[in-house]
Length: 388
Image 1 (cartoon, rainbow, N blue to C red):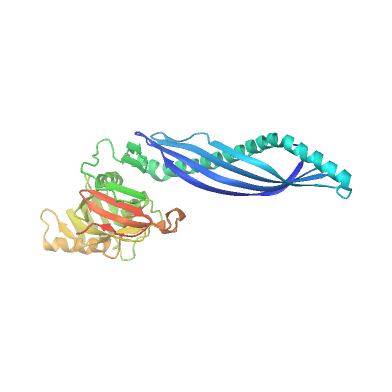
Image 2 (cartoon, rainbow, N blue to C red):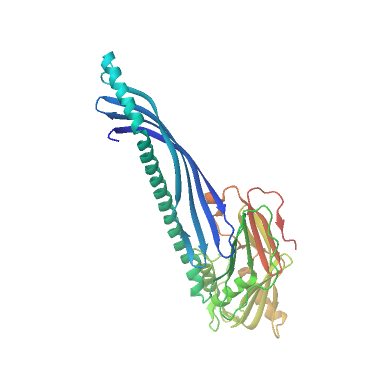
């Protein structure tokens, strides 16, 4: 309003996420509520006007996630603020009559201009809040979509798997999503899902078919390859680019997997059974076996946010005309490939270092009827595990 304003403001705000029920997408409202307290001084000519300001604001941004991506609506902001006069000073205050007259004129002008000044202030605050929220959300949306495409969508497409959304739903308390990972000629889940863990923040349930479909597309068939090279390719496909071959891994071992179901898992009664169907197993000139079936059983364990499988029991070596003499070299090789000293990760490394997951623990880790069910909650109370 023609005055040179200087001062400082203090902003206190809180964020709230509200879920709005929807049957075919995720529907969220990101809300921000806050207070702005301001102390300022305006100088014009020989007069200084000292003011205080108090403003309350509320904002709401609708976020929609569906099969096509993430959509952000324009942020709605409501600001209610008012400027109050604290005191007026004048360079003519040393002259009592003249100084008093100047302060009276300045005070009258302040009160006359206050409604317009309040409107300008509220409009400015509203535009700044909207620009800040919209800009921040748009940046995070772009980062999320880029990361999802690079780490999930494109790798699955490269494996000729078609990730598809089968259900998205929003309730007042949950975001629910079901997704299918399979090629055109592959099966998906067909058994009842485990019961959701109560009072958890995140529930994740994966059916064995999603893992088997991925493994079937990933593993080479029809060609004999070094086993350490095959393991590196599998690790890379599951995001472990820096996977190192264990030092006790046997050398000069080559395998050729079956063209159908070369490696698959079965989940039942609290355990995971891993089966390898090998057409040819070679180790130099000493070992050359045909049609070998290797089975290993694993049990789940967890520590904090780290969940993994530990081999449980002895390996099973079988195949047509597989004598004890032929089983021995296969057992020797795969006792090291599938060593009890090597765990199979369920969760990715570094989860405990992520600020968003601070204070969370795994409170459910169940393996039943083909499903792996995992849940995270804030407090470790009763932990549900599969029992062998």
